[in-house]
Image (cartoon, rainbow, N blue to C red; front, top):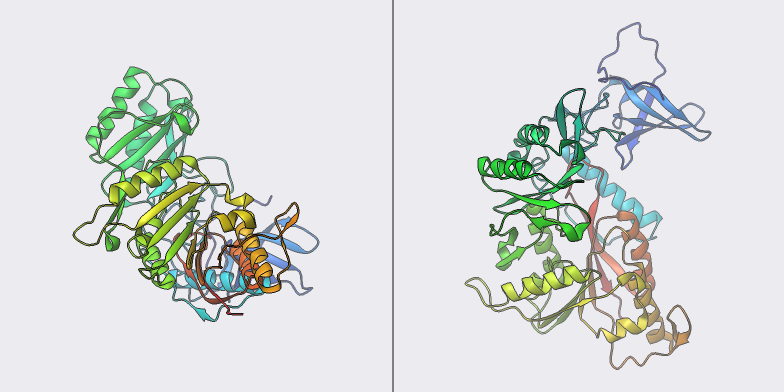
Length: 487
């Protein structure tokens, strides 16, 4: 591999020998895309659209090359100075962000184009309308993170942060502009803490989860912690109000609070009068500012009426389920994890009584089920619902929508649907498909694939747009609305 250049030069000396490449576009990994004279594609890390650049090629294939930016000869108007000193292409640069050199508005435009292209080329679908992107704070938004830890004997200190770009090493970070400011301010104190511990060489990571009032840190340790180390953790928490230590000696089942009692870890959805307690290892959205807007828009697009039944697929802790219960007659939340279902039931009971800002929550049931093994018969047993909210993991909701498509086919043609093993004519007992589906996605590729299935199931995509949940990264969160076309 060609050695990485510490920093790209933004102007070239007059006599510099150049093989200029003109960058045409940007892919989702924030690589500039250019073509050589013979048509060969060159992916250039650090280059932006409409720039003329030279680059160091570090990988050559018959159909493409991969390169890092060496010099910018004509600079894009969208290039900005990165806020974080650890961002860049230089050796040791932090790999947590990919787009800090690109204006935040342009980042959103790139993500919107990725969504549109995926819908068009993968799903063969075009949304009737584009939703305005959901945006929030560009900095200090990341309330969940996994911080790697490594004690470096030669340096006599511990490193705490994200991995280096394209490396398993931990970046030498002293600040972070995407973590909350108070967490960024803790990076150096955490390095001092780990360096002082007896177990400093057997601590691989700290899982971070910030609630509205508590900053929970889960310390993964590969050997039992000494009494002296436990005392160091407690002293650190005392010196930094709001920090709450959890310890993890093995798998997730070993995660436990260091000291009871403790302040509750939770986040709020104030528009709906909901408070969501959670454990630091539970799945919650990384960006709480965007999450509030996301939930609000999803419910507005779903347009739930008081007499309607709603199903929340992949419901997790009830992030959408409980707000839905402030609008609907009845809600069913379905999730694959028994642990999360138990937690969602607890959260429902916690929030069920009326509050000054809302009435008591509607009848709500939670069910644990593997949604990647969905069948038409299971879908019928769950009962009809006027509206669906679907928020799957990166794998998408393919089996769910395949089952919906099979039932649609039976309704339209009368031909028995195939449940994957044998054809069976289901007794639908009045079951009908939902009139509207709002799909929240963290992977535009699987959203597009599933959108194609939904079109086959008698739906049209009436709207779609991106949610900039992770500014400065290549991650694309999006939302789409599907309406059933009346036969």
